[in-house]
Amino acid sequence: MLERLRSAPLVLVLCACGGGGGEPGPGPHDGGPLPSTCEDLFEGEPELALEIGRITDGAFTRWSDGDEVAFAWGPQGGTMIVPTLRADASLDPDDETPCVSVEIANLEPEGGTAFEGFRGARVALAGARDGDRVVVQDVFDQLGWIEIPRDTPLELDVVVRGRRAAAHGRVALTIVPPRPAIPPECESLPTTGSGCRYRIVPATARVVRISEASEGSAQCPAASDARFVETEVTIDPAYAACTTVTTRPGSALVLQQYLPSSACLESLGVVEGSTLDAELRVIFAGTCSPVLEQITGLDACGDACVGTP
Image (cartoon, rainbow, N blue to C red; front, side):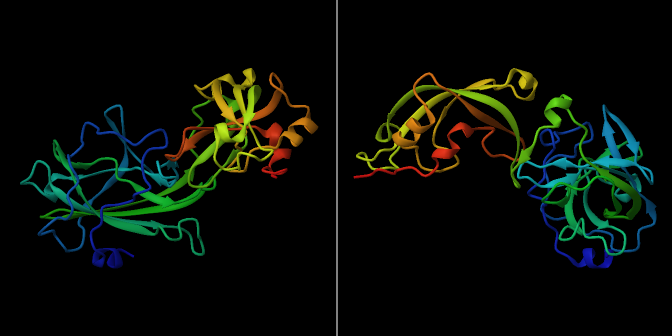
């Protein structure tokens, strides 16, 4: 695996990556802007030991075999882990911010397919001197595009190359979901989406105004029976902790379906002032719209633009 990675071109990685609760920001050992390539690197066998772990609150904690490591969601919906790497400064003793190549192999038990398509990468990164160590912080290692099943085994094998030497480390980890940062009632809500993931939060919608479709959308002919239904969507108070958005305007344009017909609204008894079932879809992974509303009480009126002369 490592031989294959050494022959691969240097790439700048992992476009799907970023932190599960936001992309990791610069840390105390951040080496600065990413280089595109590194020159004159040591190509011999690694003889230095590489420590693999994380820096939290300024302190490095080395990962050990059997440790549980939570994956993170990237802003484009990918899943990843974000290790920090440390090696002896003899890796490149002449540079305070050495350019290094990081060769990552995501290994798993024979027959495993959890990381298929994300077997590894080789990237050029900027390291930083920290006493007698070279530190490469927040290395984005993408593992997939979907949620990683709980307790998925991963052997993380990493080689870091400087100009004078190379370091190698391997650690057997167990990948687990991120720890919930929200109350249990929110964590138990159903979810939807693939690249961008949403929690479905119960809500209600009060009908504020019903008007001709031409006032709110050009999707239906002006002379049709379609109506534009304006609502105010309010989150169920039992789930108030699940989003900072508690009330927002909504409309009867549901998931790109056409607007409801007046005949359908009449059959449901929907008039101005009516209260309808609704959902707020609150994003927790990805960079799409942060909140979407769906007026589920009008789902029966999805086939609209009916009654058009």
